[in-house]
Image (cartoon, rainbow, N blue to C red; front, side):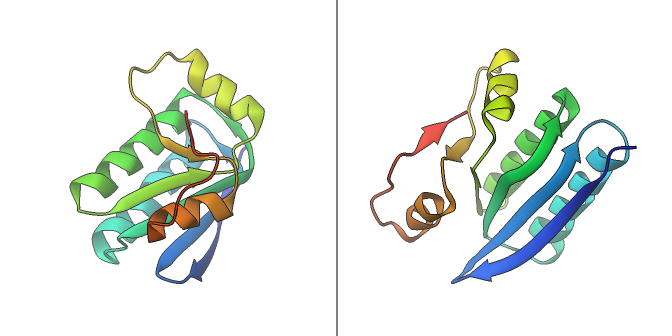
Length: 126
């Protein structure tokens, strides 16, 4: 059975949430939704970075959860960025041909720099 875990830490005023495991239909998707709701609505986190480096699998439900989290963050006055996705994750997201993109960064340092207003390096979109 697929599982999803979260590793939480703070860098300055940014909450970095590492995702480990799989973000797929079923329990992992529900865990992601619940965690994002808790962070963005209950804890009122305004700067959130999701580190995807340990995310092994994602399906269309998981991609939907990423977009839902992004929309919730923006609509509540916050910022949500994503970093270090595996090439297979990027290719899968692109294969869905979704007509909008997520703020995706190749590494954590460039994403964190963009939160502070420093010149972002190597910013990308997925």
